[in-house]
Image (cartoon, rainbow, N blue to C red; front, side):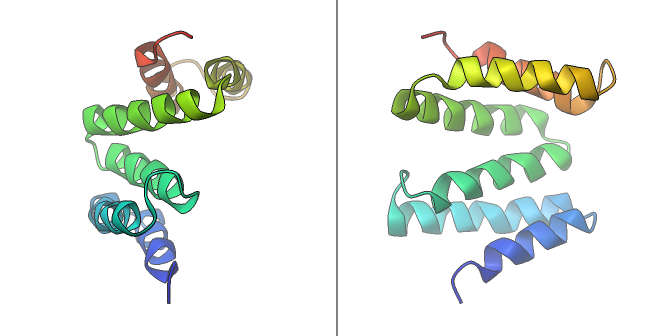
Amino acid sequence: MEGADFLLAIAVGDRGRPREAAGILAGIVRRRRARWGPRHPETPASVHQWAFFTGEAGDTESAVRQLTALLEDRTRRHGRARQELDRIVEDARRVLEPGHRHLALAHRVISRIRPR
C-alpha cells in the first residue's frame, strides 16, 4: 500500500525514535524521487519529514542542508517563498519562547536561502 511506509515512519519518529524514522524516510525520499520525480507533491512532503526527523535525531547540519535545498527548490518553482517564510517566522516568534530550538533552526535555514 503506497503511503503506508510514510505514515509508519512518522509514527516511529513521533514515538521517540527519530533516527529510525529518518532512516526509513531517506529510503522513501529515494524511491519517490526515482518513481515520481522531485516535483510530485509527495516528494517534497517526504523530504520535509526526512529533514525534520534528521534534526530531531540530532543531526541539525544535515537537516538544515535538506531543508535549505527543499526551500530553494520551492522558491524557484513558486516565487515568493522567502517572504512567506519571513512571515511564518514572525508568527512563530509570537508563539514560541525566545531561543526555542525550532525557531533557531528556522533562522538558520532562512539565512541560507538567497534573496530573490
